[in-house]
Amino acid sequence: MTLKAQILNDIKTAMKAKDKETLGTTRMLTAAIKQVEVDERRELDDADILAVVSKMIKQRKDAADQYAQADRQDLQEKELTEITVLEQYLPEQLSADEVNAVIAAVIAETGAAGMKDMGQVMAGVKTKVAGQADMGQVSQLVKAALS
Image (tube, rainbow, N blue to C red; front, side, top):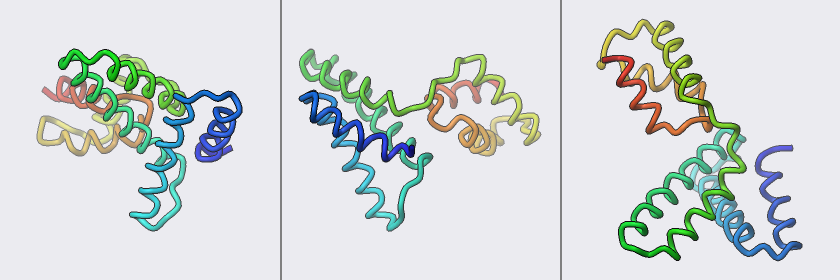
């Protein structure tokens, strides 16, 4: 079953269960997927959908942080609830040690020597850990490995 089909099934299940939070979040996800499909005039595959899900999670984390700073606990909780719904579509996350192993392998493959090669290393790592790690943290780990 494709990720898109799974999301549509989850919408039906949420409707039947009258789960408003899950229903709203999955509908928002399908709207984002359809928007990208319309903009790019192509059908998205699972990897592209994972990128959309990751982007939405990042947006929600940023919003939750801003709501926490503004002392708006109600809105922060809503964002965190949406994050938990969206995270179920991501594959299992890699540990820091596993990410470091991938980074070391990509550095060895590319022969990267310093910070000037960071873009090349990040491109290689991104293809291998797509959806399985936060790319912001991966970037910090790559910087540490190259310096």
